[in-house]
Amino acid sequence: MNTATHSVDNTATKEDRKVMASIRDVWKSFGDREVLKGVNLDLYEMENLVILGRSGTGKSVLIKCMVGLMRPDSGSITVLGKNVFDLNLKELNDLRLQVGFSFQGSALYDSMTVRENLEFPLKRNFGITNRSELNDLVIEALEDVGLAHAVDQMPAELSGGMRKRVGIARTLILKPKIMLYDEPTAGLDPITAMEINELILHMREKYKMSSIIITHDISSAKHTSDRVVALAGGVNRVEGTFDEVKLTKDPELEPFFNY
Amino acid sequence: MKVQKFLLRAADIFRFLFRVVKSFFTPPYEWKEIVRQCYEVGNRSLFLIGFTAFIAGVVFTRQSRPSLASFGAESWLPSLVSQAVVRSLGPLITGLICAGKLGSNIGAELGSMQVSEQIDAMEVSGTRPFSYLVVSRVTATTLMLPLLVLYADTIALLGSFMTVNMFNKTSFQLYFYEVSVNVTYLDVFSSLVKSAFFGFAIGIVGSYAGYHSGKGTTGVGKAANSAVVISMILIFVIDLISLQFINLFRQ
Image 1 (tube, rainbow over the protein chains, first blue to last red):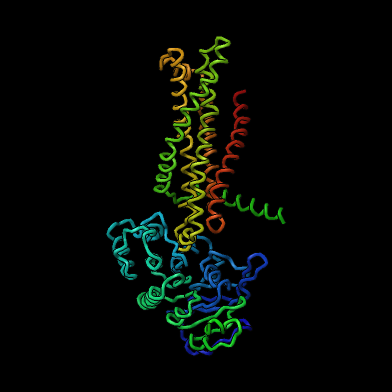
Image 2: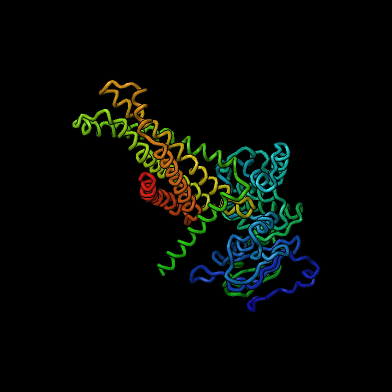
């Protein structure tokens, strides 16, 4: 663990739980700008881990590295027991099927309807072509997020909150073991943000997933987290439950909780 | 630093090109998407190519006629026009129009998908976006350009026939008999092969520009713009190289 980290002691509970993903001494820079400077993290089974930090601290970069969208300069990332950067393309794609990624801007395919958005990964990955089977899976995923009525709408016709939900449904349809949420409540009104928070908790219960939630929304972090890791200066500076982390005296992080 | 940047970009382009060519020979193929893209590429360009080719046929015939008439060689018009259209005018007009229309379309479409993280979303859901988005588009442009060139040649020759017919009453059969006598298999074959390379260049440049588009709307605009400019330049370069190559066979 990085020397700058003040890990809050909850090891007794950690030891009993299976590690789903592990990040060790990850460094990443863009040109001369070092974003991550030796981050260490573990994600445990059925845990909601919130990564908190100011904009530009490399939170999104970190989870993009976890699914191989970016490559760190050094360090290792193990997801479901596999080192992400030792895998060939086929193995990486197989791993990605078990790791869901909900994008900040939803990233819905805007030339397809909501139904086609959800059918796309099923057809491409599992070759499912049976109409009624596809329909059942799509409707089930949309019912999970409360949007079964929007099945034939285009993404452009949906509100920001609805787009987030459809994005989450499209990811959940593959029944991932780990879910990565990139700023799930960014740009949403407080009520819709609270609905998304509830959805994250509900999905964890239903699918028994582990989740990493990237956010700078304190209310979302408080609501959804089992454990919080606060990133600052390119390292995981403080770690613990939300109430523990909130008491930090770290000059970079304290204003975050007491703004 | 600039040299290093240039070399890195060149290596990146080469890798992209290699990946596309490798995908041509590596199943599974995206048949459904290829057919859909072929329809988009062909159908969307028909009117513009037909319209431009017709006008080119009319204008070229009208401009050539006085020169030939001064030598009393008006009967050579079908020969002159058909060779010019099949060898150069048809492929060039089709290539340039497709570079503008399809190149910008592919660059902007893939660019906006890149900017809005749709390509990343496909990537992380294991759906192999490269083969679905890039290879299918490059295959479609490569396959459809020769067909569009045949279509453009036919329309241009029809325009030429109508112009000739206005001045000298010439039958349709006689005009196209002259065309068929003067255009060789080598002319047609080389023109089709050349246009397949035009299509490949348009597809690959548009896809590369879109796939590596910068962030924001400016990035998408730049992707569309560079797709058009670079593919137009490549079309002229391919035309020049193919001319040298075909001349070897003619000799």
